[in-house]
Length: 147
Image: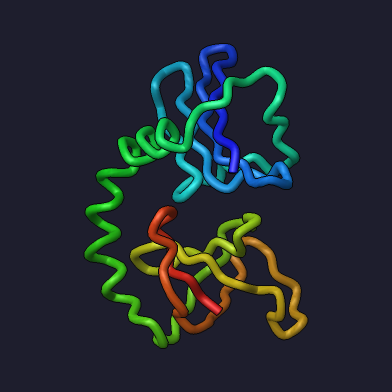
């Protein structure tokens, strides 16, 4: 993993990038101080991320410190709400958007990340209702994992 920081025209970006140049987590602070966090907002870079030019490489610890600070209030909700989704439970929700990690689903009280690679050959699109079984939890992104 590579971690980068970009400060461009009043916007600040912190991005976690895998070895293929795919963004996995991202924080954006706009010029007014408003935050967008990839675990709850559709703000993850959707193209190859250049980690060599026009950015500063930061340590994993620096990235995690910023991530923790901007998600700490969400973590409190996550800890109580995820108990409503035990492993093995059937759940249904609506597709929000598609990320490299999977299909992000709006559940009644949280977001899920669904593996839709073999979803019965149906076309999938935002606002499409889908269902699956809870298989685990992505603690960093605070997502219920669904298959």
